[in-house]
Every structure is written in C-alpha cells, then in structure tokens.
Length: 295
Image (cartoon, rainbow, N blue to C red):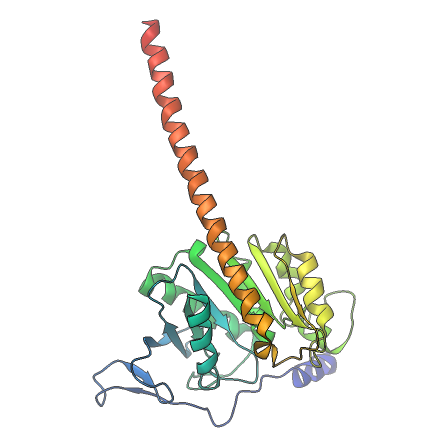
C-alpha cells in the first residue's frame, strides 16, 4: 500500500513555477508597505505575508474594489503563482465588482515552506484569519473560489464555515486519486477528498467546468454539483479545457450572474431577519398590553 501511496503522490504533485514569477519587497528600502515586483503602483492592492500554523509565511494580496458587496477568497491551480494571475484578478475585480483575496500556497512564489495537502489547508485558514482581522470581512460577505487543486483548500474551509455567502468550483476535482483512477470509494491514502466535504457545505455552490477538460474530466464537476446541498445553475463550457475557461465569454457573464444572485439573496435574508425582529418586538409589546389589561 505504501508503494501505491508514493505513486499517487508522485503523479498528483504540486508544480510551482520555478523560478517564481515575482518577488516581494518593501517600498522605500525596508520601511514602506510590502509590494509585488510585477504589480505596478496605483492598482489598489495590498500585499501581506501571513504566518500559518505550520510556521510558513505565505504571500497574500488584497484587491480592493470601492463598491464591493462581496469578497472572493481565491485559491489557484497547482501550476501557477500569483505573478501569473495578476491580469485575471484585475479583470475579475473590475467585471464582478468584488474584492479579491488571493494567495500563494506554501512553496509557491515567494511563500516559504513546501507544498502539501495539509499545508494548503493551513494556508487558507491563515489567509481567512487575515481577512477577518485586517478587513473585518463577515462570513456572509465571503465567497470562496477554488480552481483545480484549489478546490481542495476551498472545500476544506467551506465545510467549516456555516454562514458563507457562496462557493465557486472551477475545474474542480472529486479527489486526488479520482483524477487518475475512477475509484468508487474514498481510500484512506487519497488526498483532497472533496467528494466527502462538498456534502458539508451549507451555501450556494456554482460549478464551472469545461466539457473537453483533458486533465480533470468534466464528470468531476458534474458529480460535485449533484452532491451540493444548495445548487446554483452550473456552467458547462462546451469545448473548454482545463486552463482556458476564462477566455470564453460565458465565463465572466455567468460569474456576474452568480454574484448578482448572491447579492439579491443577501438582501432578501436581511429583509426577512428585519421583519422577524420587528414581529418579535411587536409580539412582546402586545403580550405586555394583555398582561397589563388583566390587572
């Protein structure tokens, strides 16, 4: 069994770009704020070095939108780092009118440590804590976004948070071994057991997958959508591969539709809660009047 485990780990490895496509430095020679070498000034992006429970320091970037209702916590795929995704984050922030918190896993880009399944869990937990403490982002205003292997840490965190605004699964995997073999049961040595964790997610889930994905078959996305408690209309991009879904016009259009739907849902919840609170106060006053009338 040990040989099987080693074989799977070797074939489903992490592939951080080498060398990293960016550097982190402090503006003004050590006294100023953190900056990314490939990110021009004036982009309204804040850079953080966040320490994880494993002792690693991961790079995180907060892309602020002045009129954002939601914040996306974006977990990228296994062969990219932040420096390669700056244009995408700029486009998503602009078209979706959201804040974006993105980060590099341990061992990726300028983040320290080594990449592993459990380190990705520690990474996203630390970045989430940063969002809560530095930006006071509430759970209900947060949408977790996981691309490819990033669906692992995304569902790990989503299964633990009960008031999330939503989840987006982009070219997601059912589990590590299921990318390689169509096994019917979850094996103890499997990694990123999303097929089990999706059942614990209690918020709307949008699944996006290409029908011609050559790395993660689109049936992974289909099954994750079927297992979701709160299903949002999925987007199956005809002819879409594993790494090119952003180039299809329906990609950003469907994401915008999802964000708008979540905004409306949040508004309905707020109105409902307000009405319930008003009703409760009215009932209390009415009961008091009844008691007073009996005296």
